[in-house]
Length: 491
Image (cartoon, rainbow, N blue to C red; front, top):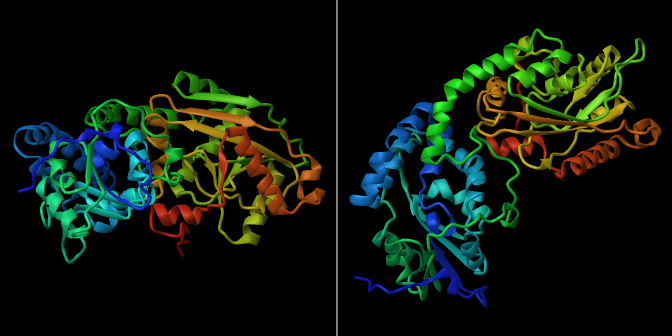
């Protein structure tokens, strides 16, 4: 039996001369502000499972909280694990842990604990959560060297049974895991936030408690890595209350999205803008767009950053006239209902160049050289092909605000993207038309295509307050979906 100690609050913990020492810290309520892991189980249930599984988890909340408070913390967590994980492929859980959870974890880091944790040379996480769920985030964003967490039971076919192999890591099991990992060289410091953390904290040379006080989350920019890509449909962290409100909003949102999509298809773009106001879509237009192309002169090439699948459509509405667009991939159904002409790129350079030239001869054209969307304040590397095909280039900066659902996906059904955008109570688009590139900054003026592409990327980033990166579509899809992002043609 380990003797219990009284632990001082973390505010009294020194961070000096810790670079050669080891820290072992709990996660929920300690390194994270949230004391409950429910939102993260909900995200796994929804994104790796289904809407029904997520709803089932939400209905189980009263039972789980009752068990947690009056019966057993371990059994309550086991219940969350069973509902969220049973029958899921381990690969799908890993993808969600890598692509969905980091964004929400990163917005939930407790600053005073992070300051202490980050001052140590060797860092260990000791958590009751499934290791598979937290390992990617704490390793890549918090710099953890080791993660001691609950281990899931897995079938030979790679499916989670919903049970655990050695018990939920709570109380004495946390202490035993630390002893097994470190042996006689126990951690120099133990950090926790609840009584069941005292077991492992008591064997550390020092121990401090994290009080349950309200605090602002650590700015994401202070983490070891920025969150550039993330997946999942939910914008807000799904606490039980937020999840309940989201489920209640869904039927209303679906009806609203159908009206917003189909009511505008037959209308001229100059009328659609007024219809947006009536239907609760906020469109802010800045700058002075060029006039419509004159007969025989060809159109302007609008070069946009890429936020959602609706970028070209909303740009047309902002212009008040028909334009065409090229896109990396588009379903037959989306092409059929698109209010503007949309042509899919084939990734065959000569063929794509010919299609873009033909569309420019017909009129104005919108292109998004990033090749895929990015939700955060970053711009991906711009493909330089567009710069070779026209010197009449107008950069367009696009920003969006979505409060409930994200209208982009790498793993889900892309055909649903426009509907998810319009399922938000008040989706907002801000379109800024910049000045047309002067001749000396185009290929015709002696610049290389890459120089033109990089210049436009920099100008758009400066306008939006975003950061330029060299990341590509492939980088995004490798992280988000475990693929190369190439759409295979069907023959």
